[in-house]
Image (tube, rainbow, N blue to C red; front, top):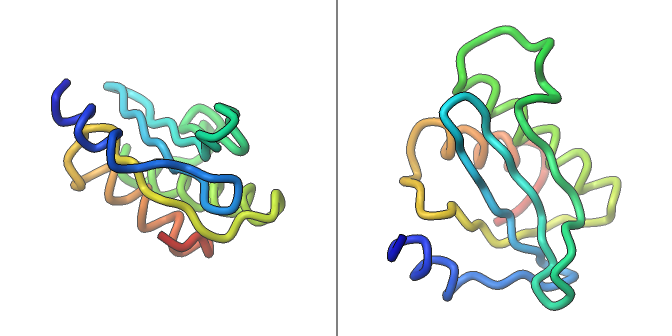
Length: 107
């Protein structure tokens, strides 16, 4: 809990550079771009939308990152600040970040 609070106190989202928030459950992964000045979610994606994609959880996370980046492009967002939500930058969280970068999102 402390790790999440420490990270969260340093990362803020703006309309031009929203916060890319990641949540990882046991079976799914969720990502959203949040404008903290208004408290609104601008774009979101999760592994439930990638149900047709076969593969391991890491592969699904990468697919979610790519889908998030494509949705962000449609919304006119090209950059974000990464909030890993207290999770280590490893495995599914890292795959999601790499997928978002491949999709064209900069952070």
